[in-house]
Length: 229
Image 1 (cartoon, rainbow, N blue to C red):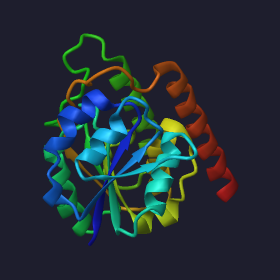
Image 2: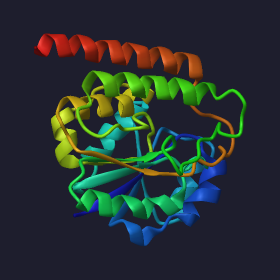
Image 3: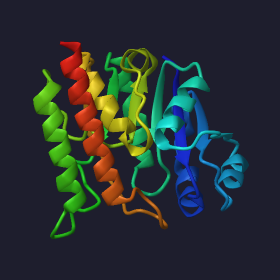
Image 4: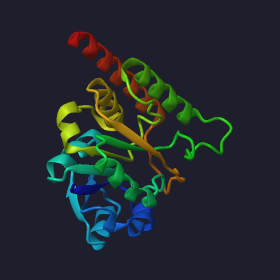
């Protein structure tokens, strides 16, 4: 099985300087970067590390996922954001689970043994919202083992499963929609606990607009389910 690590970037120079040199290059067959037109030196630094950078023509996280699949012939892609949240040591954990026949493998911030960025806070607003969205789609569509973190972007997706689910969502809904459609199609999902570190530098998804986008995504998939009956 050929596996590609896809680094997703947009103006993440502070993070990539710390994170990219720590990536275990021998854990995958290929590394590429999909860059959303960075202007802060992100692209130049990654290229200095000997990693190919592909610049997005059409913006958005969903488009970055689709461009990644179009840019390689690998059997599975691991998506990784070098912003400090995702642990480079966990990259090597995907391959055994992919080779075991899983269609999607997720690094979970929610299961036993994991650490969520908000775990040290009294009010874990983002974590609680994420868990609510996850509970809803497990109840609606999952007929297998409960998946604890259907939203996290640190995940591996096989080419076979991508061709089945054909996610068309924009922005940050791409992972959530992928999980929903994987449940709908009875695909095999697996998780392992990950340690979510603190973010390096500014940025991240805007909470309010992202939450609204998730609600729209969920409602659309519910309506599509009724049409498929």
